[in-house]
Image (cartoon, rainbow, N blue to C red; front, side, top):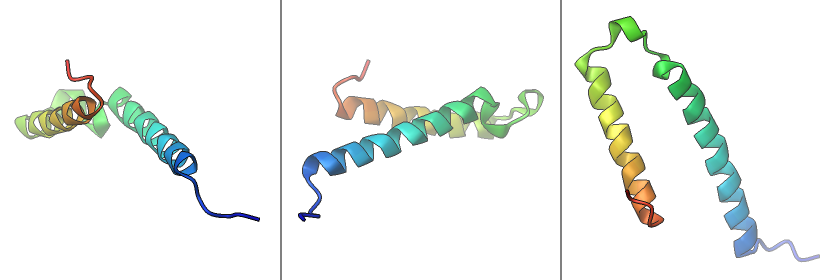
Length: 66
């Protein structure tokens, strides 16, 4: 039996891991990333700015930088 991982196997494993992480990120976003909306300060704004920039960079890798 050949147990060597193919590129497709690795691709699908990464794809599943990314989808799981995106779902986690969505749950965090739905909960204001654990922050009390009435206690938001500029540090929170900066954190989300860095997250947004990172997401923009990831989208650009796949040619979807709007």
